[in-house]
Length: 161
Image 1: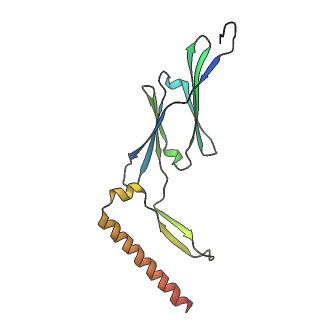
Image 2: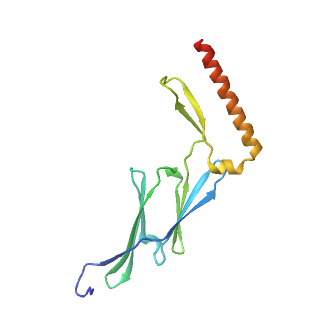
Image 3: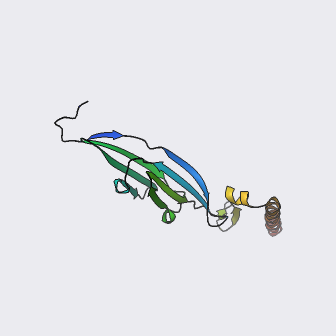
């Protein structure tokens, strides 16, 4: 298709290659996802990003190819499970690298049963925490949690009687 005599640019839309990786954070409780987006030929100023209220990160770019031709892309990334303020980006050598720190709480309180005043403690261990902890420490922690649960359970039974 010829573009002679046209003032409108001819767009070549493409889907850039993306690779997800895991990275160790500053402590054993930190989990960081790394997203590398291959953008060969693009310059830093040709790539734009926008964080929207819907929990999505929008990344787009346009690179002139000559004679009214423009190579462009649009990416939409769900970042709702990440610490938004901790997201970092680096563009180097035709590669955009996003550092996305996870926002997993170690402890979570949930309402159990119909009584809103009674909350149970749920211990959520991320895979990194489990991987970095020895088996004996995990067994000890689970026994401790089981002991606390049994104590509270017996306490509830004695109150009901």
